[in-house]
Length: 202
Image (cartoon, rainbow, N blue to C red; front, top):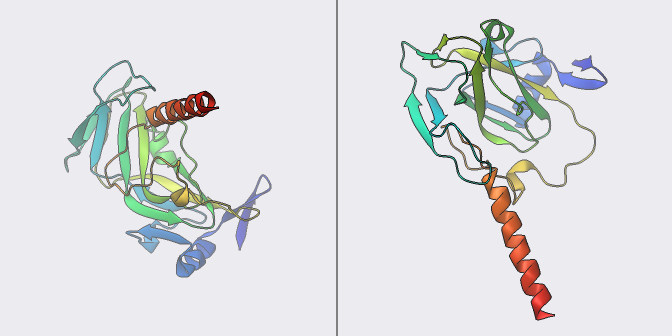
């Protein structure tokens, strides 16, 4: 059985289990008690990263400070970007995964991502979360922070994410991964150099 929303099919609990048996969806660690009717609850890892500089530049590698979340929790404050990670490692080889915050977490004013809620077919890693809060709030390692839902797709995928040469987040890492948008500008510079070199040779 599948759940239909706005013309797109979301996998139900039974279908998620079926796809896990096939190996097209992998969640580690997995516990059936966290399986919702059409989602799977994921947990917060034990590491945060905070950018060193107040002004961030997409054209350079922005340095971060790593903080371990103690068992008794840590307080987050507004006007800060906290990079965190899911405790779970996931793989999705056939469906498009979406990561959404739990409603109970949202009611505390915790946002778990800014824009990057959608994953790609072939994404195999822990999820990095871009956490922000509306008021001071405490978080704890391994608290249930969000939920994964899986959409069916139409057509064959030419290149899964984990096979793309331009993919920036394929290295398996349990720690949060800061923005690597600066690599876009390195690639653009390399292309410009190659184009100029080719033109001069002609």
